[in-house]
Image (cartoon, rainbow, N blue to C red; front, side, top):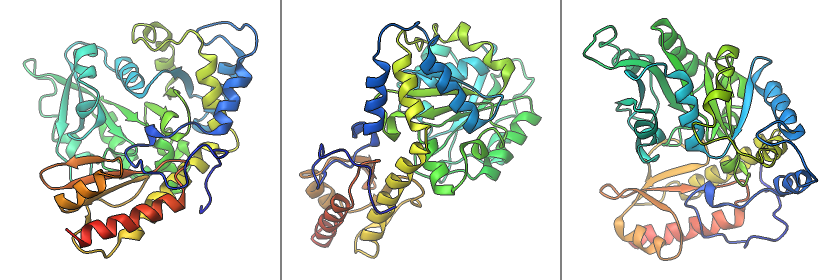
Length: 357
């Protein structure tokens, strides 16, 4: 889509922040939903009409057996989801070496759950069935931790997407060995938009057991959901959610945001736009000297390698992350409200910087 959701003049035409979709503000429909929920008194801890509506929307998207729980942040959703799947202190989680739970969550899984993360190097951030089986040699051996959960990210931390078939293949090998499949879905919307499929096709139908559905990166203020796809597991969440520090008292304000995103496919429209802006940026720098794309652009992230002098020049005017300082790899992120004008201006400045490097 070439247009962009209006922020009613609240952003500059030429945005200079390409660091993260977390840096964007909120979609007007989300803000309106929060205001609408700010009416009178309502039961706390999720026993409110807004959360009931949110749970119906979750069933619409993920299937009748899915149960949604509003939570405060993505790390919390991951910790709650993993705690639900790990039954014993000696059980461990298999994940890519680049996984968010292993690199950018401050050791929360190890600290809060006491679990070991068994990491696997990957080329593109994606696990394969062979990667999983390569870490199962210790099953049944008392002096080794016991793998119990496979955790994958959709979108991966490198901006790549698993297809439904790839997810299903991982689920099949995990379940065949008595393991469960967890999906960090902070950017699940972007993956579904890129692949042109439903949320259910990437999760429920592919054999995922528990998935996080990210709202904050998709136009919410603070809103994530833990979606449990097996009823016998969902029954345990009320006993774990407070222990995980994710039980919001005024949950209606989280649920209202998620419901707004899950109404009239707003989540998809926002993700499609963010993805389109990343693609526009990648196309705008294609063929330039001294710059190469590091991974395929399959979401709202562009990873590129460029000279250090060019990075310093661009950093003096733009905000973005340097992903690998040694190799000069940067990450440029777009959001639901990134404008084509800001992308084109950025691409032009990138061209000037790399040609002069």
